[in-house]
Image (tube, rainbow, N blue to C red; front, side, top):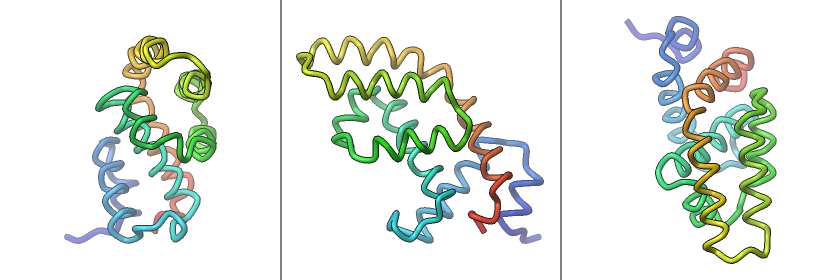
Length: 139
């Protein structure tokens, strides 16, 4: 039986599966952020953060993004009603924008990384709730 994304989201209780499917649908349909809805951008910005930090910490996030999309990522965390990761991210951004030498930045980011890793599944739950509450932006 073929079901659409909306049915899939409301029938499925596996947050990771829903987010993976949402990511696939968004990135295969629209390759340009300018073409995405606010909801789609929200998920993409948070997944970029989760992917980069999860793979190599905040150091990798800032190295790979060069600080691009910082305000958008903060806004995305706000839109999903997150305060925990947003607080960590704000601290990481302050460090990124500081005049500290790289080794001190890396030490600070490492401490933030360890805290961030506790929030992966929490972020997936918030993103799924956001998708369900704003499903019209994803179908």
